[in-house]
Length: 250
Ligand SMILES: [Zn+2]
Image (cartoon, rainbow, N blue to C red; front, side):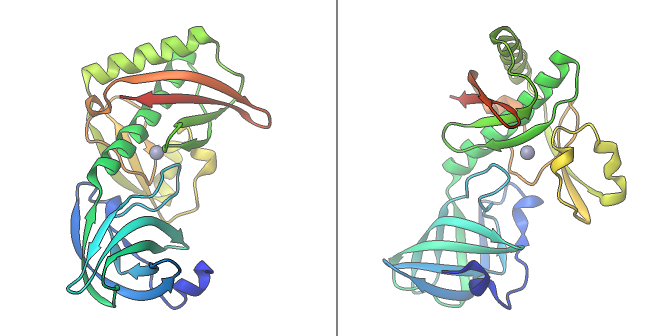
């Protein structure tokens, strides 16, 4: 089904996860229901604690419960500011009206730990090479990686980055979220993803205490000590732009 057709006439979803990352459950309103095959449905809600697939993050998962139905959230997709939930029926069929939303916390925690780890790798790469880094892309699902412009790092450099990141995780540092208007954004010109930022009226900034602020719409842990055991296990050259560093957390 065409996403543009699904969201036609819908107001932008209120993205609660941007400001309140700790919200695990929420009462929201389903404003649109469209059936899909195999007992699946497309839903639009007025507000969301679910992070959609995007910015390197896989979608949040979880479940929605109304008075007469329950569905599992399989995927959330952002279509020009309107989030579309692709869900599978567990009991009954979803209807327009109030709904109780609940995140799959285990999945959220894992993705948040990986996302904070990716920012930490940016920081360690930049401080060890003494050069600002430019990220190209990232993936925080299975086979997590961060992509950078430039030459493939040596295994010695990779070990140094891993060593520093591990030390910082063991020391711990708070992660804070703040917001800047677009005029204030020039202070971020050394951010690893500055070249890739969308032109928004407001930028969300994620800062690991003691590190450079990074514009980011993703979910994070509140302290890097929660990342756990980090390993950088592989690099891979990507012909057109640079390389990827693959990492894992345990
Ligand atoms: Zn980020």
